[in-house]
Image (cartoon, rainbow, N blue to C red; front, side, top):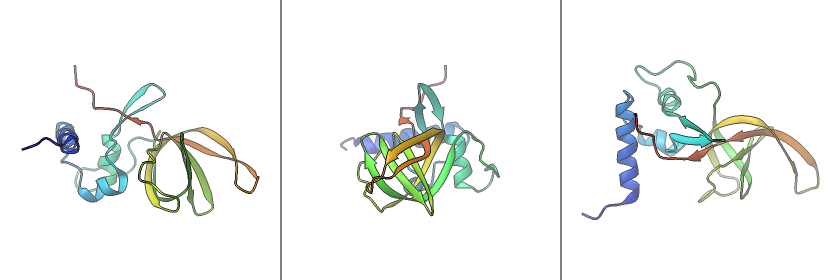
Length: 148
């Protein structure tokens, strides 16, 4: 049987969840929130499995977000993308998320985002209005680290 890179990654991620004392993430959870459980933000390694466990709910899951430095923003509307990330809208609120993986994402699509607040982002809209909105960092996906 020919090896498929995506399958190898999913097997590794399921093994990482089991090692963390959780079952593998459900397909619905992966479809909504993605599979970037390990990220690097400004040089800091971040293991987001506790947050994904909270999002999955069920027996043994925390009742509140265990990683308060991170935000889970469900079903945001993509408002525009550039090389650095994307602008998202949630009702009247706007956010710029840097390092967001935009491959396969289109304007108007709704996606759920897990990101870390990092300050503000200023941009000029298509009609020439200068706006300052919250800046969040999705982080850059990295492989899981092995325990020493």
